[in-house]
Every structure is written in C-alpha cells, then in structure tokens.
Amino acid sequence: MKGLRILRAFGALGLTTAAIAFGAAQTQLVFWNFNESNPLDEIAMLTPDGGVFASQAQLSIALAEFRFNNNGSGFRGSPLDPNNSTHPNPPNWALQTTRYPAQGQNPGQAGIVVRVPTTGYKDITIKFDVRWSNTSSKYLAVEYATDGGLNWTRVRTLEARVGDRWHSEPDPNGYGELVQIDLSGDANVNDNAQFAFRVVTIFDPATNQYTPANYPSNPNATYNINGTLRYDLIEVLGTEIGGGVEGDVNGDGCVDDADLLVVLFNFGNAGGQGDVNNDSIVDDADLLIVLFNFGSGC
Image (cartoon, rainbow, N blue to C red; front, side, top):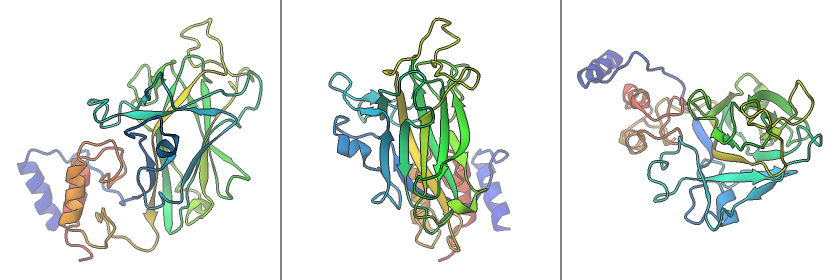
C-alpha cells in the first residue's frame, strides 16, 4: 500500500514512473572527477574525489604518461560532468594521457590502472568516460584483476567511432553514455582487497597494428605516440555484503530525511552520490526508491 500511495503521489506531481527501475542501492567505493581548482597540481588531480575507499585507492599509468599542463591550464572534461555547462567556474577538468608505445609495440600493456579494495562489497560496477584524439589507438581494452595485477581478465573492447570525441557524446560520434562494466558475474571480484582494473591500448584485431581513432573517417590518418586518451568520471561501486537497506544513501542504516536530501542536492548529476539505482543519473527514479523505503532500518 505504501508503494501504491507513493506512485499516486508522483503521478499527481506529474512525474512519470513507466521507466523507473528499482535496483539495489550501490555504494561509491572510489570516484574521480578531476575538478580541482588547480588542474596543474598533479597530487590533487590523482587524489580520489570521493568513495569509502578514497584513502586506499590509487590511480597510476603504465608505459605512457600523464599530461597536466595545457598551455597553463587543464584539459576539458566529459560532457556528462555536471560542471560542463558552467566551466571553468566551477571547472570541468579531466585527466590527459599521452606518449603511448610506438607502432607495433606493447599491445595490451599501456594505459591507466585503478586499484581499489572491494572489501565488504559485492556486485562491483566500473564506470568512466574516455576521449580519443585523432591519432590515439582506436581500440582499447578494459581488464580487471583479482590478484593485485598479476593476471588480467579482459571484459570489454572499446572502439572509437571518430577521433577527438568522448565515448559519452551522442551518435554518430559517440555512444551517448559512460562506459559501464558490470562485474557481478565474477564472485572473485567481491570482498577482495586486491581488486584492480585497467584501460589499455590494443592492436586493431584485423591488422595486428595500432589503428588511429580517426580512421576510416580520415583514410590517411596515422597512429602517433603523442596521441592522447583523456579520462573523466572514473567510478567504482559495490553493494554492501550482508547488510545495507535499500534507499539508505548515506549508509547510516536508516532511510530518512538525510538520504532524501542527498538525492535532492545531487539531482541531475551524472551518477555519483545519490544515484541509488546506479543508472548514471540522479533523477526521479532515485528519489522514488528513497521514498518507497522511507523509514526502513530506523
């Protein structure tokens, strides 16, 4: 009856419920949005911006380089960042990478590496946005490890549609959403202090060479080690094992006004805190989940 009353209340407010999907609330384990006041501060840029394991998580790079200085400024971030419309105040920055291996060298080895424990959590989800430059590798692999990085499992291959575009840009240049990887099917990822994932450049499967991101849009395009891959909105989420109350956004065991305020203050954001159903947007669906479970655990 409580759920029916809430649905009627939302209907009276003119909010649609047809597309609302209920899902288990996930907790943010680590998050980077790179929106530092000084994008040239390397330590600040690589320090997580949120998550229960922010103090333990690490972001590094292998066989390539981070690039922080863009002629005295930073590098523009994802179009899905809530600050995108107000940039540069407040800013929307991203993490630039470059100096990848030479043609024919080190496939599947060069790229960013994220290490974050999943201790006490299951059903792990990875999210991020990536921007290819024209001369960067067209193909990237997303891989994860449960042993600290000794052995990697490939879970997704990403392909640039054109160069100088974000994955989240709409068709035909992008895919219209963040990259999202669901690892709930591998129990070894759960409750694991040595979990890591990486995004690395790989050869074109048809040629066994690096293909530039802007090919075949530009049939004369060539791969270059100075091509760039830019990352933003990197996030790892999980569901608490053996505990947690659906709709308990702040994790205090009680679904109350505080949880409602978290959703309202983050309303419209591209995921992050307040995204109760983990669909990369804080919206009516998240608000409804909190209201439906209001009072639970209190």
